[in-house]
Every structure is written in C-alpha cells, then in structure tokens.
Image (tube, rainbow, N blue to C red; front, side, top):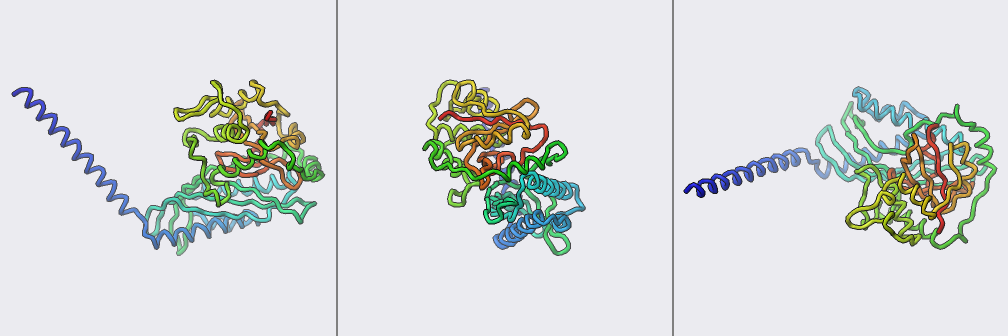
Amino acid sequence: MHIYKIKGLQSYKLKLFIFIIFLLLLQVFVTSYANAATDDEKKQVTTYIEQIFQRRNKAILSGDLKLIQSLYNMDTKYGTWAYEYEKKKMDYINNWAEKQGVRFTEIIPTVIIKRIKGSNDSFSVYLLSSTEYKYIYENQPGVENTSKIGTYHNLQLMSKNGSWVISKEWYKDPFANSLDLGNIKASSIKDYILAQNARDFSTIDSKRLKSIEYAQEYCGAASLGKYEYKYNKKYRNYNPEGGDCANFASQILFESGRFKKNRAWSYDKNGATGSWLNADGFKKYMIYSGRATVIAYGSYEKVYKASYKLLPGDFVAYEKKKDITHISVVTGADSKGYSLVTCHNSDRNKVPWDLGWSDKNIKFWLVRVNY
C-alpha cells in the first residue's frame, strides 16, 4: 500500500508537469499567433523595407544626411544610434574611396525577408541583404569594379506621421571603423594604387582557380543569387559561437586545394580542431606547418605594396591587440590589380582586402599558401 501511494503521487506529479508544459506552449502559440503579420502586411512591410534600403544607399553615395536621418525614429535612443551608425558608415566609405582613388557609382541592395512579426503600426523583421558595391578608379572611368557584401539585419519598423521609420536596427557590417587619414599618407598611397595595372590569373594553378569557385559559391549572403545565399551544409556554421571565417578558409583549402586533414587540422561531425576553426590557430598552423609562407606583416602603410603579390587561394589575417580576429581568402583582383578577398563573418565576395579594416590599430598578415 505504501509503495502504491508513492507511485500514485509520482503519476500525479507527472500529469501536473505535463499539463503545465501544455499551458506554457499554448501561451506561446497564442502570443505568436497574435503577433503574426498577415500576408498583406508582410507584402506591405517588405515593399517599405526595400524602399528604405534603396533610399539609404543612394543617400550614402550622395552624402545626404537629412535623407538618411528621415529613415529613422530620432525620438528613441535606438533609432538615433542606428542613424549614427549609418553616418559613420558613410564617412568611412568616403574616406576609404579618397585613399583608394576611387568613386563609388552604385550601391544596389537585394533584400530577402526571413521573418516578420507584429501588426498594424509596429513590426520586428529579420532579413538578409546582399549588397553590390560598384566603383571606378579616377583615371579609369570606363571600367567598373564590383564587390558584394552580405549582412543579416534585425530591425524594428514603426509607423510615424504616415510613413515607416526604423526605430531599432542591428547588423554586423564591415564598415565599423572610421579611417583615420591623419595617420595614413593617403596621397602617396593613392598615387601608387592609381599607377598599377590589372593582373591576369588565367594561368595560375588549377587548385587556386577552384578555390575561387568554392569561395564564391559558399560565401553566404554575399554569394550570387543562383547559389541562394547559403553556406555549405556539409559544415557547421560557427557564426553564432564567435565567427566562421577560419572554418570557411579551412573549407576552401580542403575542398579546393586538396590539403589533407591531420591531427592538428581537422573537421568531422564531432567538431573541429582549433587550427581549423580559430583564426589565430589557423594562421599559426598554416605558417608553422610549412603549408604557407608570410609575404608581409605590419600596418597598412607597410604592407599595401606587397599586397599586389597575393594570388587567389592565399589569405590575409587581421591582427588587433596581438590577436588574429579575422581571416579572408584572396579570390581575385580589380581593374588596378588590387587584391580582392572572400570570407564569412561578415559575408564578403571579392571585396578589396582592407575595406572595413582601416583602423590604425590593425596589422595585416599577407600569407602565401603553398599549393
């Protein structure tokens, strides 16, 4: 009898636990349903967001701060912060263009809505933006260069005075640090860059050519639309855990360069070694194993001339405060032979190798991979 009572009590507690879980799930369902946007609302919000991104990019090109400001709810601190970030981004792009001797001609966004919640006058949106940046060199106006940058946005949209404005926005963007031209001799650098010529990679090793193909296909939000803006599903995406750049660089070497895995450098369904996954570990492993050789190391002013030696399949490591924080793989060169890179976190496809990394505290490792 005693044992029976205990079992009965346990059964009662189990049923009560299941009932509580049911109520919690019901509450989540009801809340989600109440916050779900209708199809018509989703179409309307999608149209407004596309217009906002297009207008914002045109304003960045023209330097129209008033237009950019009009896209944000300046009555809230988050809206103000989001506006200030875009202002900083505009300043950075203009400063980099001056150093480079280029003029951006178009910034074309492709917006893909992943999720919309809310109704009436307030919506939360998660989206992917694959943005094409086109630029020409001052002494080469007839030749247009193209780079793609992919970003993932969480934003809040609200109705204000008969229009829609951004009240909050977060996304990881490579244009985070303003270029301090006071610490860089921009005029001499510009003259040097403008004096260069295009480079021909058609005769390089086939493994290097394959590295370009793999990088372009799996660079996520920066890839071409035909690849659906996705990573290679064979590999885990480590962005939520701190970054996926070294993982992507390792994939390129393994899948295209046919570098063999070993105890130090490996990936399988159970996880990856530090030298495969960690940016600092990847750089050290590649150099000390003999699989790669350093071309140049130092500040931008010290290495920018050596950057013209980089070939597709080589990589650039970005060091801040004596720690490697990012890895990009070289995938080409623009019309002046300036090296272009492709990477994850944030996603970039054939972007100038220093764009977004012009902070005066950054040091660069330019590394030749020994295919």
